[in-house]
Image (cartoon, rainbow, N blue to C red; front, side):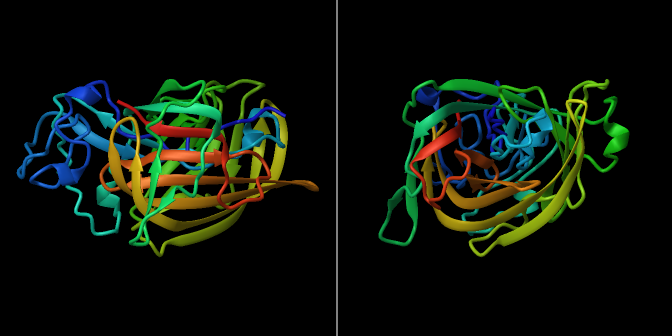
Length: 324
């Protein structure tokens, strides 16, 4: 069955970001103020009120039955974005390294874009390398076979055919490089939730799936002790056909450490999600990891193949990491 890989994590990579070789910094520790902007320059102690804006938009894991294939894989989805117009953030978000990621450190909204380097069927050990202080290190800066850069945009609900169906929606974004379906998300002070999945256009073959209990891609504030779980019924139409199934999302922060991406190094909390989908008597389990950091949001995701039995696996159906 066709795999439907969702974007559990997209990161900062707007069109104004500097090339890696031109970067003044990669992480906050490289700067006197403790804050490195998306463009690779140190953020001054007092940020101006004009210029570009640095933002992070997280998306959640959505049901793969949205493409008319209820048995397909369902990794996860998210966006961290940099809407650049001068390379100086206006959010005033300064990473403080306190181990807690709050809603104010994850600015969310429509009209943003992010570039991610994506590989499929890639060999990668999710356990990373253990360090002596209880943290781990992961390296996703290396090249993987079939790497490609993907630009993802977030869309405002206004003017869309589905806006009235999801009145509380904050934005929508593409869920896969192989499908034009959109995940519809709502942001609140305590969570980013997935409301449903829709097709870009209306019609007899449209997709319109809703979660009875919208699952959270992230719950905030996010700490090393964060954990959440929800079971929801998903119903509606998938490619014009009636669809009804259930999903259980079991998420927790299970590790912390340093992640290296093509964009740079980040201190991260790793969110482990086990997604169990039940369609009739058929059960599919998909595992995923999202690497989340202050001010940038989710900078990488790694998703397993369907029915992976190992909590830490070595072959990823898809991996995404922030790229310049």
